[in-house]
Length: 107
Image 1 (cartoon, one colour):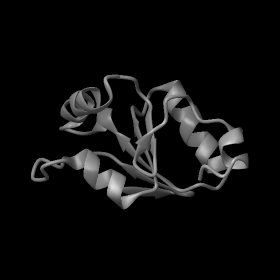
Image 2 (tube, one colour):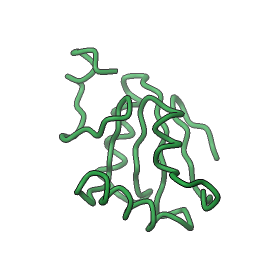
Image 3 (cartoon, rainbow, N blue to C red):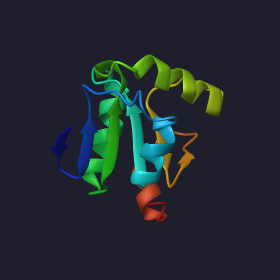
């Protein structure tokens, strides 16, 4: 795990011993981004949260042994296999975040 400005980036890991790794991350962080490190849309979302000084946890699925399983579980939970998948306070955001989210006190 490496720390970034306002962010925790989780890579090179696996939560095989945990029944529900998604729930673990949602309980531990107000903002969770399920991401792929090479995805330009994912990087834009992470940059947006950094620019508004909102901490987040980024789970880099392409860097994890269990990344495909987490993505399948996201599909099962949300009906969507879209990356980035952004959760705020445990709820999946249906639209990409913008600065207006901060202005409306969503964070």
